[in-house]
Length: 414
Image (cartoon, rainbow, N blue to C red; front, side, top):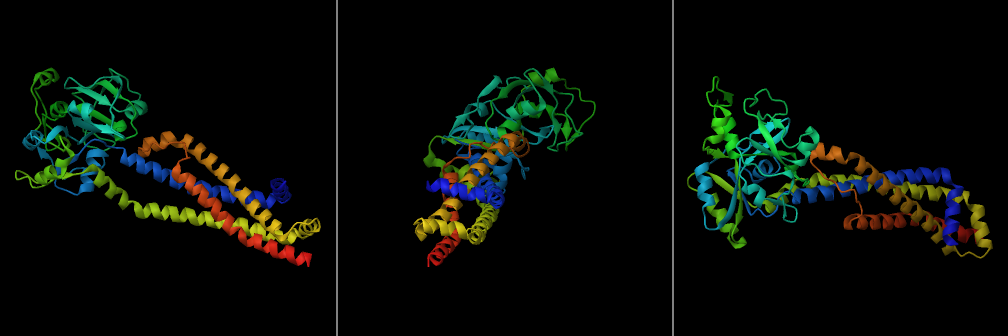
């Protein structure tokens, strides 16, 4: 009865109610969208690497080391000598060590030189291991394993051949076209930069650069591809190292030892700590977006409140009839509060539905251009709290027209 009366009252003023509903829906869409994308982006960042105790690179900033070794963003300031890698990997406190070599690309996707240990020890999320959708890890010098997004966007299949480019530019004229690689494995989607990476062996990286000097290919190379496959190639330097330790208790001891390494300037970082620093740097932008979204929502609530307040004058006859049948002033107060609540609840349903539709349509674009895998399920703990806060805020702001209706009801009775 009470709810039906509120709905009929809103339907009588459907023009202004629809406009208020649209404004509220847009504001809720923005607020929920910012919160959901923020939450998903933070989760995606946190899940990028798991089970790695330390990342070692040439001495630089911790964020720079994290960005180029994990997110394939930017470039290293220097390389690590192979002898240093062997020395660190041989430590009794090191359980496994994954070498990383960066610097080449393929049609805008980064090339990741490493060893077969990478597919065994690297994990993401809650220690999820890398899984092959098709094929297996590289064995031969000119084998390549590609991520799911590389395969999807470029249409590659097992057995296809591709040419790597020197440097990381999306368009490169320095191609290693005399030594093509063959795809032997395609990884299952992970929602991390792994999906947009081509993985080759360190020997493969050495093979394509064996006749290059200072970034320039030397002409008339006499070394054939078959000879390179038989050669025992060993890198002179690598870009970074991922370490797994025998004991978590040894983490800070090993880190301090690497940071004081005498043979060359190195630094070791804890991925979790560096990820936290990275997210803190984005905190200002994050909080600004939330503040702007909250202000948009408050302005929409004030618009609904203004609409309800202006309707009080138009509802003089309605108020008189309700008072005539014995409705107390508190009834009018609750009726207007319920109208505001209904507008907010319908707006939340419409805003959440619109957000889900937009996420479904933009999912591929977000993955391709930003590497973000956004879950289309917008109902999580933070969004439910946010919805409850929005309902509470709308009820509080609607108290202005509700109190006005209450006063009007008292005066009409008098």
